Length: 248
Image (cartoon, rainbow, N blue to C red):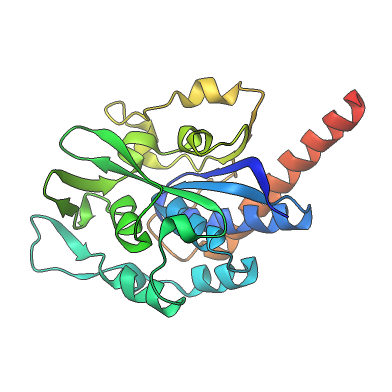
């Protein structure tokens, strides 16, 4: 049974997002089943598959075989980005059509950024495909998703670790996976939430995989990333359980 008060926040980070798969494996082994999932960029892709009820073994297969062509096609408009993420819609179609976010087994939110206002946009209803396309639209790489009143790009520019979005869906406890991609260290790009403050929140379990030396733009490290995510999650979850047992 899903836990309707337990949230999972999956941060962005390009190919580093493969580490999220390892986290899902560790959660499954410990029979932890978050009923709420929020994801930014790469975290939105893994999170959407998880929220849709795909088995973790299938998610792992998809991540291991994914290439840039899975998510985008070359676009002639280099002014907008090298890739058009419409190929992502084809990938979603292969998984059984394009569902509505509100129809997924788990509550789900994908985070994008309105380039005009620099505010985060939370997609928690409507078609899944456009929400994911917006969430992964890294400026300069993927073309933005343009609507009459918004220019939507990668959610990492506004909220790379969507703890707040998970809480807005009803989570009282959140397991957050921070990948610490390069753009989190750029002073101009700051999350709408204070990650430092969240680090000390007793209702947030922060998982920080050791991704030293691994690239957020290359697939070569995917097996190591999955393993790093698993090890970090297993350690954090087991330590938390041990502390709770001691208190009890």
